[in-house]
Structure formats: C-alpha cells, structure tokens
Image 1 (cartoon, rainbow, N blue to C red):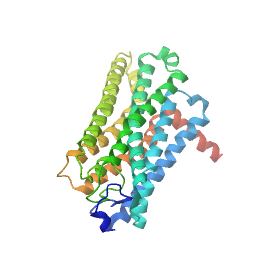
Image 2: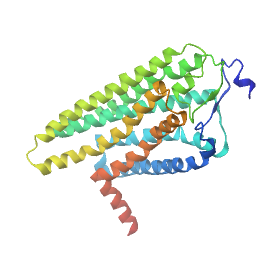
Image 3: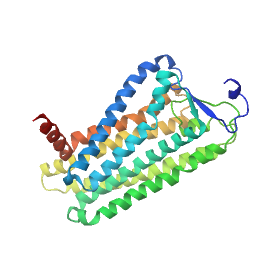
Image 4: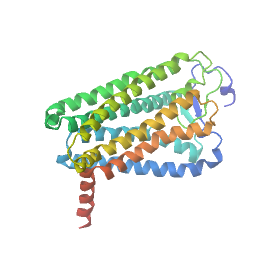
Amino acid sequence: MSDSNTTDLTNPFTFILLGIPGLEAAHVWISIPFCVIYLIAVLGNFTILFIVKREPSLHGPMYYFLCMLAITDLVLSTSTLPKMMSIFWFNSREIDFSACLTQMYFIHCFSTMESGIFVAMALDRYVAICHPLRHSTILTSPVVAKIGLAIVLRSGILVLPYPFLVRQWPYCRTNIIPHSYCEHIAVVKLSCADTRISSYYGLFVLFSVIGLDVFFIAVSYTQIIRAILCLPTKDARLKTFGTCSSHLCVILAFYIPDFFSSLTHRFGHNVPLHILVLIANVYLLVPALLHPIIYGVKTKQIRDRLLRLFTHKGT
C-alpha cells in the first residue's frame, strides 16, 4: 500500500478515504448521529412519497416537485452514507477509482438537481399566489413533466465533465483522499498536474447554476411578497405567507451550507480539515432530514393525511 502512495498513479486502481481526518478515534461515536439522521431521512422521504402517491388530492405540481425533492434527497444521502459507515465501523477505506468517479458524479449531479427543483417550486408558488386562477392551466401535467426533464438534463450534462476531467489527470503524489467521500475538489487536489480547469469549471457550475437559481428564486419571492402585501386582510396575508414558509426554510437549509462548504474547500486554507469534512457531510445529510420534517409540519395537506393515516391504523 505504501508503494502505491508514492509511485506513478496515473490510473490508480483504488483511492483511500480517510473518513474525517484528525477524528479517527471518534469515528464510531460520530457514526451514531450520522446513522440516526440517515434512517430518519429515509423514513421521512419515503413517507412523503407514500402519502403523495396514496392521496389523489395531492396529485398537483407542488407535490410532484416535492416528490422529486424526496427522491433527490434519498439518492444524495444513500450515495455517501453506506460507504461512510463502512469507514467508521469496519475501517474499510478503499474505494475503486471508477466507483469514486461514479459517487462524485451522483453527489454533484443530484445537488445541482436539487437546486433546480427549488426553482421549480418557487415558480409553482409564484403562479399559485400571483396568478391563482391560471395555476391549473399554466402548470399542467405535461408542463410539470417538461420542467422535471429539463432539471434532470441540465444537472446531468453540466456535471458530466467532472469525472472526465478527473480521470485524465495524473496521480503521482498519493491516492489518499482526506475526506469521507469522493468530493470533486478533494480528489482534484491529489493530482500533480495543472488542474485549474477543473477548479474553474467547478466554480462556474457553482456560480452560474446555483447563483442563477438563487437569483430566480429571489425574483419569484419578491413578486410573491408584493402580492401578499396587497392582500386586504392580515389573516389573508399570514395564511398566504404560511404556504411559502416551508419552502423558504428548505431553501435556507440547502443553500447556506452548500455555499459555505464549496467556498471553504477552495479558499478556506486556515479552516481545520476536520471542520471542512464535517460541514461537507452535514450539507449532504441534514437537508435530507429536514425537508420531510419541515414539509410535514408546515404543509397542512400532508400533515392532515399523515394524521389520518395514523388515526386510521390506530382504530
């Protein structure tokens, strides 16, 4: 193993994931909250999918996008946590080079996809509040399907250069990744070539995709807030704003850790490595936990169906 870490690794057979560098002694303890978060996230997102599928009254644009978000969260968390647990529990740190590139693609593809879903959900709220009488004619099922397809294609195509660029770099320094999963920049930093194109392309995706998505979401909610303030009564304003509050909470839970994680990995040279890795793990796992909880508590239709389901089983 030591020889493979210092010789020519132009096409390394495996990478070695360290987990959370500097906290190896606490891996077992760290795994407990991570595992609990994952199990709750899986249960919560499958519950959302089950309720929406079971209830015909929920077969609308908002809930279709919510189902897309649940599937994305399941893929994101499942693409990282099982390998992470094998590192924490069994010290199984090796990952095949192709498997590493596949994991990298899934993580960044579905993260980008999740951002696109938030834009679609903001569009749905904008049409529902600003043009309520035209909502069913504007966001028809074919239109929702086309929006979903556009989100998937955009994410898949934009992230596709990541693994291809990583595959072409020579790895003659080490095959040890100081991370718990194959994060793009963490892998690129192992190369002994000039990898600025990978770093620049990653920043391009970060600012052009997520930056534009945040811009469109901000524009949508500016129009929504203007429409809410024009409502005649305080109760109507509070009720209408309540339908958007869950979406705003979910957006903050996703974008704030995303921007912080991406920028600190590139520019946070003074931030301890274990802090960077912990933030990156939290960014992938915690939103998947929070999304079904937030929507379950804040969305009356889902909350009522969930209570009815448990009440029916209890009787």
